[in-house]
Length: 94
Image (tube, rainbow, N blue to C red; front, top):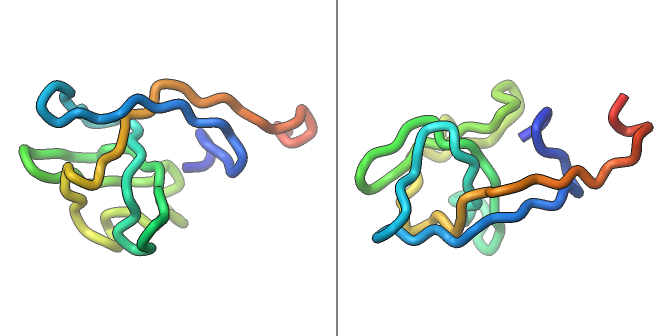
């Protein structure tokens, strides 16, 4: 998700409740990885419908996203990111 999220950044998310929450294009979500069982991934919603979403990483040239693993079911969505707290030092920002 670089340049918006980096390894080590703190991500705060709220649980996704399919019966109450509406997902929108552009939202960043936490999802169970379709490629690596037991891992979580953070991606941006590119497109969505009633039952699935298409995810894209912000760094499209090096992102493993729906272009590689296809659509993700809403059941795999764990939460919607509310806040990102950068955990880098000043020297890492330049």
